[in-house]
Image (cartoon, rainbow over all chains, first blue to last red; front, side, top):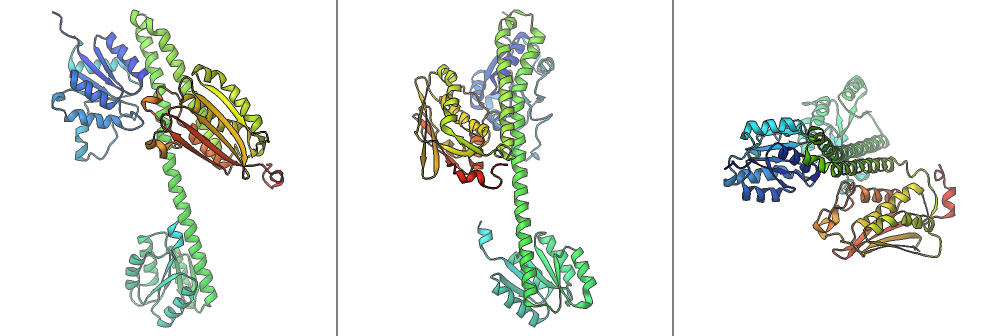
Amino acid sequence: MTPAAKRILIVDDDRDFVEAIASFLEASGFTVRKAHTGSDAVKLARMERPDLILMDIMMGERTEGFFTIREMRRQEDLKGVPIFVLSALGTQMPDFGNPPEWAGLAHDEFLSKPVDMVQLVEKIRQRIGQPT
Amino acid sequence: MGEADAPETVVVIDDDYAMRLSCCKILSKMGVRVEAFEDGTRGLAGIGRLKPGLIVVDLKMPGISGIEVTSRVHEIDPQITIVVITGYATIDTAVEAMKCGAYDFLPKPFSPDELRLIVNRGLERRRLSLESQRCEIERAMLKRRFVTFVSHQLRTPLVAIHQYLDVLKHLGDTGEVAAKREEWLDRCLKRTEELQSLIADWLTLARVEGGALMKERIKVDLRQLLPGILKTYEEMAAGEGVSLHAALSEEPLCVGGDWNCLTVLFDNLITNGIKYNRPGGTVTVSGCLSGGEVVVTVADTGIGVPDKYRPFLFDEFFRIKDDGAKKTTGTGLGLHIAKRIVSEMSGSLDFESQPGAGSTFRVRLPAWHEADSAKPGSSE
């Protein structure tokens, strides 16, 4: 029996972006799940417990990604699932002065958009190992 | 502006009782609220409490000097205007006080008229500087928000295009991607169009805000303009299964404005009516003269505006993204631009809407008077 492919959940409200990234990840051997809103992402993540999550920040013209990350971090069943932030916001996450209530927002990796896909796959492999 | 309606407060600080009394008398008659204090310490405490617009302070007082009061007041609020009173012997000190930020000085003895004049001028200066400060802050905030949104809106399609091209470059020869090639290239083109219209809208807005579009104020008959616009969008409407109708009055519907500007205005309203509609629906453009105004309505039978979105409809970059709105394209600037154009023309734009049944946008513009063309500036 061959081991199941590693599953990646990609969350972004831009369907073209999701389509392009998903194709590349699939071609690299990963199984990809897609969500276009924060609430769909939380539902899907709890249902399928992916091996890694790629998260956009600016969704629906708000910083919906932040709230989605916080919600995911609260879920017991998603403990230990790495979250990579993919955003065009800048080269790093905005500094909110680190008040304690933002601690739940900690992400595991930040990649700025447009994403260097070779580097993305490399970072995913470093984190969760080979696709299968 | 409640702040402007309330009388200004003026604080007088002078150790001379007669001087305090006469200043209070003169200033009360001017309609301002006056409070007087006999020394700097009490004066500063009073200023913290009363938040006056202007202070009249004697330079030579026992205890805290007028100069010190001046610099301390500006630590409390740099917008407070300060007038210093000085005897002839202390003109040099008065100059020094002005270096510390005092607005003007009054050499003793002075007449009631001199006091009134200088206080009025000081209050006026303060009002103007507060107003320009407020405008500055508003403009800076607006600009910052606008830049953030625009850069997000510009980047999003660019990132999508970049990502597609990157995948095609990396995996172009593999079977699965080759099959999607055509579709992806089409998407790249669509996203490029999205960028083009965002830039076009952004430029239009910048030109409207700069007043450029309204410089060409000529007589425009909307009965000639509107049918042309409707014709332009017939094909687009047919594609959506929507029919376009015109119900324009027999009499001319003339307004003073710029042809291109008016075209942008009705373009935006009519394309919204088509996009936020449903197959089998209609868009009806009606126009008539009413009470010195040209009233044009654009009525659709579409999804309507949910109540919760009413306050935001004319905001820049606002777009309804409910299920009913499906995949409409747009920059979110159309109605904002429309509103700006109408207000530049001293008109109004409002709407009525029944969620699920349709919306009617109503434009009211001042009707053209032949005298308008003779007005100075109107033909520049």
